[in-house]
Image 1 (cartoon, one colour):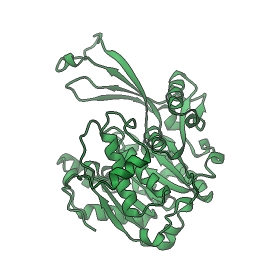
Image 2 (tube, rainbow, N blue to C red; image 1 turned 90 degrees about the horizontal axis):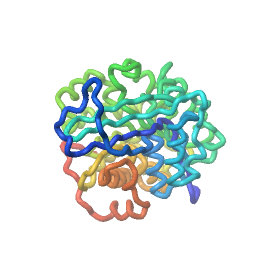
Image 3 (cartoon, one colour; image 1 turned 60 degrees about the horizontal axis):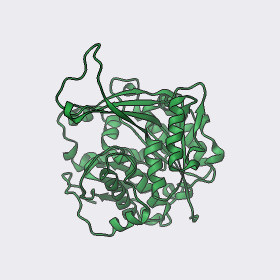
Image 4 (cartoon, rainbow, N blue to C red; image 1 turned 180 degrees about the horizontal axis):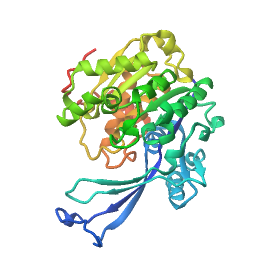
Length: 377
């Protein structure tokens, strides 16, 4: 493994616009036709997988390249300014399309009321395989793509564009990693045959890191709706986890990690040693130690300030651990350690420390959250 491995993070990117509200307004009806609502200064931040996973990796000290698609507009310039504020080099791989509109989300979060989101998908819906500059990918160890369910061209035609992109990346010897997002059941993405999409892309996906909810939605919609109606995600049984991961591995992924929210991370790997050994530049040094395994890491017990981007940061921890040659158990622990740093802050990435602090937490013997899932090897 090279001394300074590179991870490319591509996929969904947007500008979050978050108006501030006076806490004294809690419980006051705010929205009515024709009403002017006084708000506080807005916070501008980048959002999406490119921002959350990519910037978390950067903060961990991993050489990171970001590839999100934006427009040549004011919001696009704001995205570039925010990214350059962390490190000018991070903005060099951004895809700027003069014909596209930068994606944005207005996060309306009045005190004492449920949040609302006004979202424009913009350039994310036009992202295609040809947008990726392969010259900037060729020497990478890992290529991570996030949120295809909210990127229209990436899920159409059974994921043909995503499959083409992953095939080209793998042909360059780069390890591929994919994360998902939960489709809106009432949207176009909610009516896609996700089993067909997964069957198309997973033979080309070395590391697949969706959430339990996303995976259940895609593979067993009836079970998803049943659990959702019962608010029962924290108490699903071991049978469901094994059934879902069995199917994902059978479709061709080498490593599958199900993010379980505050219950931790559940990882299973293929029993096919040859498949695992063909994972590209970031193939684990100890292939035998990663083959045919089941590993579970509960979350660290920390005070929770916010959960925005927690799953994305968990992914960053796992991928960073992989590039550092960690054993599967340690990479999984690193993932939940980084996730714990995320939830200790209100935003997605400002609480992510240097890797040395992650190692210290991993080996500190710090308390873990009790699980209600009855998970075992």
